[in-house]
Image (cartoon, rainbow, N blue to C red; front, side, top):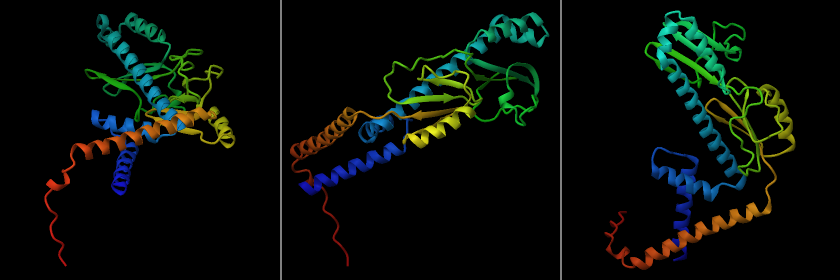
Length: 278
């Protein structure tokens, strides 16, 4: 009984470890297994890193979706797109004013038949050669959409002093800084950070911090770079982690006992193994 229990336990842990390493979220079943693997095997620090990555990814997706919807609706509203294509300066000025009202939109590019119809915002961080406005890097994770024959590219960038999400009250011990593809600060739970900070400047500071604080991580989520500086975990975190692990092991043990009690003759009904050949 003891050997079979430990064998079952080892198989259980092996399966969920593999599921945790190869996260597949395409089905409810895979998500369920990933969640169990995350809850059981991740340390408090790693679990917090995972939660930060998930929350940032969700907020970024939501922000990009809202910006895209706003631009699309504004172009369709009162036939604005066709008016601008017809050289209506008033419609173009109205669109630009509305774009400027968005506190988290950095720029918009509008192409038609490989020709630039409208360029709004500062795209200098996306110049392929560093200085030419005619050679803008459009590949990669830059958000885009189409309306008929027209292509639109845009990027999110917070206005000075603007923060789209307040992460200070989530309860995370780690401090994190999220920078967009253009190098600007997008999200952070550090209320004292200079919101005009660039990723090139912060990276130097981060490398110095990493030498002093072990466990610092850099995560990449699509067009975002997430810098995480862990806090010192309190003893209660490890107590709860051990308790959680114990409860999962105890649940597996009770399940194994239940199966043996409910189906005591299950092994007797299995087909006999074929004789070994020498």
